[in-house]
Length: 292
Image (cartoon, rainbow, N blue to C red; front, side, top):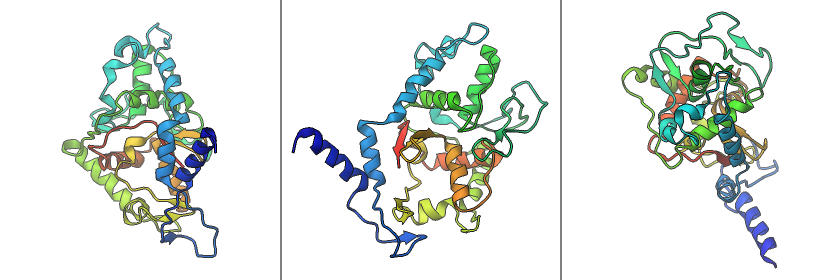
């Protein structure tokens, strides 16, 4: 067996694994079994992660000048060196969530689109609340570059996705440190309540899968443990052949338990991100992640 073939066989073995979880959710013994190993997918991703191409795309956007001649690099260094560590503290609670300068217009855009519904990136959100990294990126674009804000959605927000991956990658190897005390406590509690609230026709919560049944198999995939999840987002999903944002994952999970999904950057998703992210505090960022 030549070296190339040996590597291919090894990669397949890592991906599909041989360690069958004995327990299942949502299926009987008569259903086809796919022993898919999440650890195997991660191992392959360490050597070859297509999501890393988005880092390069994000850097190009980072250096691209806005209408006033300024770029992100104008403030934060040619390759973003001054932003190292910044992403470890997002999301964060601030006194003025999203002062984008426009209080008119619809609350939602792309309304009714399954993959596109989002809070209007052109409309301000006033008062105290959770600011995500995506919101911070748009605020910098509008206030410092005189540029248009980017879409928050998976379908319409490719530039936002690439920039988010680039900015978070600048802090790779640094531990997450999302605040949960002080004024953040209220939003952390709100996110915790949502995380453990059972919903949808399946009557599942986030914790049903990723705490109480982590390591088990559902629909042929191993349920990942919540610890360390957030440190890998955005994550390249092999199934979709695309990097996926945190709120894309939240929406997808809601649909899979047959509950109503919510818009990208919805209030409760931002609070959920505070709680979910804090469960990985101390874990080193590894962006983009790589999963099935």
